[in-house]
Length: 433
Image: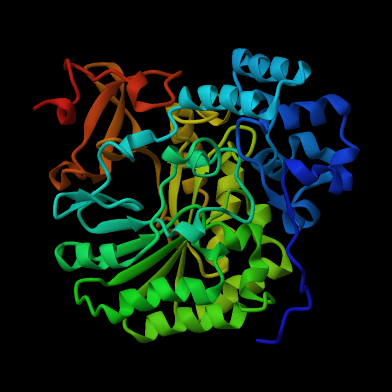
């Protein structure tokens, strides 16, 4: 494939250099003040590709990519917003404002679904920081140098990786403990490099981790996954960055070593798939033999319409990607702002699903990632004349729970599992001893 004509130098924007974005300076003063206020609590980072090629600045306040990357007032409940705004108005010192922000962050469930309490594995009686093992077949690895992103999603459930005290962050500085752990756990077939975004790393650094996994010669390790938003927020990483060709060669090396390489790509809206650069990037990745699977949470204000999802799945399939998951917005951070009621989520999924061909019906969802596992909202049923919510596990800490249907009382307002009540029983089966 010929080199891209869309070569570009990466330019990051944070609160410190926000004034360098001319489009932001044209926003109403109140909006800019709100952005800077909420940005003291939630992490903010974007870049010139997002600003110049994704956001429609003529309709910025309703634009899905502005809402996806710029903090907005609704992301904080009124009491939290006023607490931070008051401190800023009083010209409170930076350290004191950060202390207030950390207090607010501590109330936002910074590590949902038992990430810290239940997912950290042990080796020889010692915990392994930067590694998580929730499901038998898959281990997550958080390389320390990949714990940032080309742009931060305002709805990210791992927002605490980028903001707040260090004890909230998950990171591993060495891969040798992971390899020792894998050597003792033959049930593990998949390793997921995640973050943050591992593809913010230079290829030579990423290669130290991947080469070590290949050199370990673990016969039970079949798949290396990379969780990434890079295709959406900086596709030049695969086309014209200085080490783009080295990255593609690394991908090819993985597939030629008989390991399946899967990019778990996050696309939240079909417009992310429309630029020349992202389409070229997708084609280049696929040429290496790697597979691209796509996933996204369902988000109020961004993609909470079935036509958006149907269009996105159709486009992904046409580009050779595999639709994988629709997630329910997790119970962390600004869930009150981005969350969609579970029944409405199922209706959106159903209506989108019925408007795509079988090739796009690889997608699963809507799925909640909760402490026991991934729970899919399968539909609405009727038992003895009463409407019920039909649920099942797609993944579970206990594999015996997978695909076992269970029921909850019909609740049009519930947005998360803890707001549901079991139908006809005192407890859900997976909470019983």
